[in-house]
Every structure is written in structure tokens, then in C-alpha cells.
Length: 316
View 1 (cartoon, rainbow, N blue to C red):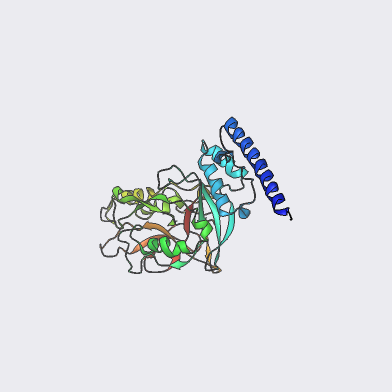
View 2: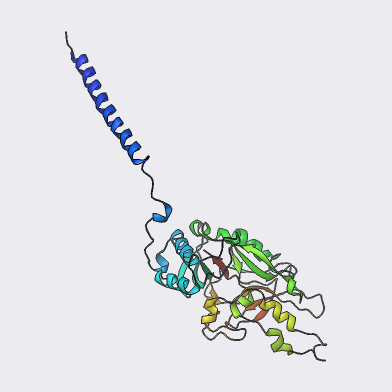
């Protein structure tokens, strides 16, 4: 009678014995070593190697932004950004989901407060115009930026234009703006939390003196004894000028480097600031927001109901 079955059982028994010995040795090692092998801690991950701005993936660029944000000083932040080829003024292209190709430029480092209270965002970027849209089709400036139809569009359809990988790393930040419309009260400047937003006149031009330039600094008979200084102060309170515009020499009356001359679909266009025009003679013409002109001149006004370029800021 054949005994091949018995031989198989013997082989299985030997194999099980070897496995049990190996298991026992493994248990002895675990006890001696204090437990199972641990994955490397997050702070032990391989450091991201610098590359050209255009070559970073969006998650990688978010890592660079975190390094910039964690810097101990603005000078250190600038050194880190330079080492990773993303200094102020660095530019790359971005293809939107509607196939429009726009440019992205680094305009600030550690400039914007994160809306979640976790400190400063590392990088602030500005797009060239992503669309031509009115601020409010209803033609009003009431409620300023906070109540504007364009802000609502940016939070929905505008965000949908971004590649998913970029949208996932955009950091909401707090923006200070006159959210009343026609007013001279400093308290009208309040915060909104935004992922995509328009730049204010002050963030682009620095201190604004448009009312003083037009009407003078003292009330007089020509202006009906109106003191226009509070209007300039209100406009100037809507955030600090970004380094990119300061480096380019932009003021409220000059753009010597043509940093503000931007195009959409091959044509130079005027583009919106989020700053509402705060004064009205009649009380019934509250219908204007400020713009940069198509020539790049820093300041003009446009009817809220008329389309202009949508130049977007975003933070990583």
C-alpha cells in the first residue's frame, strides 16, 4: 500500500514546526525591541528638493509655502523663497478648467493672516484676469465687497475654474475692506474670509490720496465744505501694500514698471479692485468700484454693472 499521504503529513508537520520557531524568534525580538517597527515621523520625511517654480506640483508648492510661513523673520522667509525659486516676482502659467491659460505671480511672503487663526499664509499669488465680469449686475455698491455678486461667483464658479490639485491647497485668509459702500466711517472696514479675492486699492497702491489729489486737503466753497480726508483714510485702511507692487514702484498715481497692465484674451483690460467708491454727491449714485485702467494707470472707477477683468488673489 502506498504511503505517499503519510509523507505529505510529515512534511507539513516539519514546515509548521519551522514556522513556529520563526514566530517565537519574532516575538522575542519584539519584546526586546519594545514593539513593532515604527513608520518614520512626519518631521523625518525627505526634504523637498528645490526646482523651478513652474515644475512644482501644487501640493509641493504648498510644502514650500509652509516652510516660508514657519520662518522666524521676513528676511529668513525671503531666503527660503529664493532657495526654492519662488521669490516675490516669480511667475508661472496656470491652465484653468475652461482651458484659459493665465499667469500666476508671487506678490507677497507671509503677508496674509490665515482665516483659521493658524498664523500667516506663506505665499500670496496673483493671477492675470481669469474672466470679464461685472461687480454687481444690479449696479450697486451697497454692501461693498462682502455683498458683491462677484465675491459670490469667485467662491463658487470661480473656484471651480481652478485645477482640483490647486483648489485643495488654497488657504482661506482674512481680508479687510469697506463692506458698506458709500461711507466715510473707518468702522466700515471689516473682515471677510476668502479663498479667492480681489485686491484692494491699498494692497496694490499703498497709501491712497485720490480724494486729496482731486479736491484738496481742506474743506472749501468748491467742495461744499466737505472734508474728504476720511475717504482717503478709509481706502488706505484696506490692507497693506504687497511687496511685488512696492518693488515695482506702484503708487496711487504711477506704475513705472507696467505691473498693472494686464490682458485678457489678448487685449489689455481694466480690472477690478474690491474697493467701493465711498463718496456720493446725491446719495443715489452708489454704483462704483475702483479699477486699475487698461493702460496700467493705478486708479479709476467703473460702474458696478459693467464687466471688467477679474484679477484674483489666493494664498498657499
